[in-house]
Length: 234
Image 1 (spheres, one colour):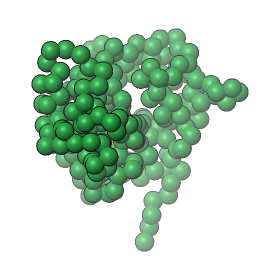
Image 2 (cartoon, rainbow, N blue to C red):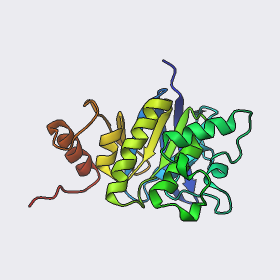
Image 3 (cartoon, helix red, strand yellow):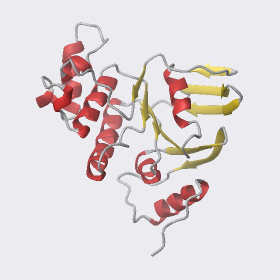
Image 4 (cartoon, helix red, strand yellow):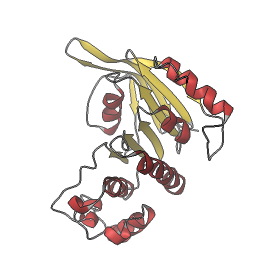
């Protein structure tokens, strides 16, 4: 199978500081990959480069033409309705129909005429997801999209993202600080540190995944150790 993303020897420096040092990354069509790393490790820099929002050097940089990004902040235009935000910059005769279907998919069709400032945090991120998905991306890039949400809303958003991934079928790269979030959602987990990948873990447990599963508990402890976090003992 031809990889959707095929990157060889990708590097990025800011002045004298090398953030990414010869990264190799392959993502298959429809694969869900999570990216972990300490603050400042270059996770968001790598995602921005995949989105075309930043530049570096690479021996090979093969990316699909249709890519969408969801950031930590929804970044909705406050003077446009939810529907207008979702269709912003998208042309075509069927765009309104696609937007309506996508809003249905994220459970937000009843708020399509609402103004962004009237939305809850979870609703605003649902709108951001709909805006990304209406573009029919082959690669969906998620940059800590649940970080500002409360714990219960985060869990609901995990289920929503998983269902949307299954229905729409894009490859996904999720940047997160939350180890369990990565384990709960991803097929494969990469840890970024000192400018390169220090660990790669495939998650062999089928969905739905429960924290009580001993294999997942072992993976979580292994990843926390890689990140320099000792498990809490009481």
